[in-house]
Amino acid sequence: MAQVLVTGGAGYIGSHAVKALVNAGHRVVVIDNLSAGHRRAVPDSVPFVEAAIHDGAAVRSIIGEHGVQVVMHFAAWLDVGESVRRPAAYYHNNVVGTLALLEAMVDQGVTALVFSSTCAVYGEPTTVPIPESHEERPLSPYGETKLAVERALPHFGRAYGLRSVILRYFNAAGADPEGTIGEDHSPEIHLIPRAIEAAKGGPALQLFGEDYPTPDGTCIRDYVHVADLADAHVRAVDALTAGGESATYNVGTGRGWSVREVIDTVSRVVGQPVSWQSAPRRAGDPAALYAASGRLQGELGWSPKYPELETIVRHAHQWHQSHPRGFDSP
Image 1: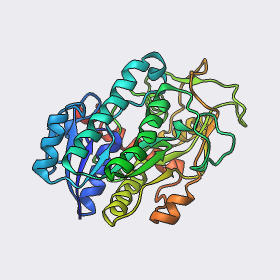
Image 2: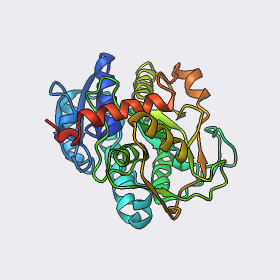
Image 3: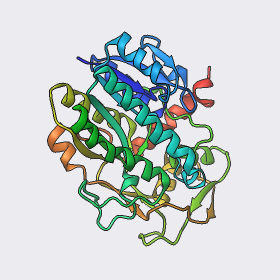
């Protein structure tokens, strides 16, 4: 079992990965500046340091104190629309912050990294499902920042012996099936929790674009259960600690659902209609993104345990029902 440093481990995906790592027997330490994460998302048994990854001294101290062998890197901003409005901030956080983390790793002799990347590196696909070999043409600064890090990693490999597993995942959704952790963003930007809120009397959901070249005119996305996503990260850690080489994998179900299909599913699960209103397309949104994940399944033995949209929505609804104020709920 490995000692793993999880950056952004108090965030949505990071906290689910922490739980999966602990359940698999790994030792974990978390660093998070809590700009988007929640301290209560991290188990009390897991050492936690509140700091930014830009703080090289803090990262070096954590690595040395805990004997870190693998870094799992989630600490990044991810709002496509915001990245279009604030590209400088996204480059500073996602690229400059990651470079500071990588420098600290190299200084401390840590040569294994699991990098949280995104399907946004592909841009508007020319074929779906999207294979890892697809040309990378991001449409947003967010996608560009992730691709910039991806392109830096082979250079760190050649110069410093860094081995990395890049996981390009599609739309993370759902919540821990046991209901202990879930999605709690402020403001919430993801479709499923916003649709659940709208079905329960909250603000109307904005439907960004109804004229895409898709069967019902709305965007199509591949929704992967956050617990399945966490499992992929654990498998990546296991591969690296076993001496595996650098690799890039898509993490998705291989199937896409439209925004209208999500709305219908949420209405069915919640038992109330989702109120929605039309809105213009958002800059940087491709029409359809869903994954070819055969490489991950073949090489790491991964397969989604919760591939159905209704299950994903049900687990998300369960979390929101039991935590109406997120992690601030009693």
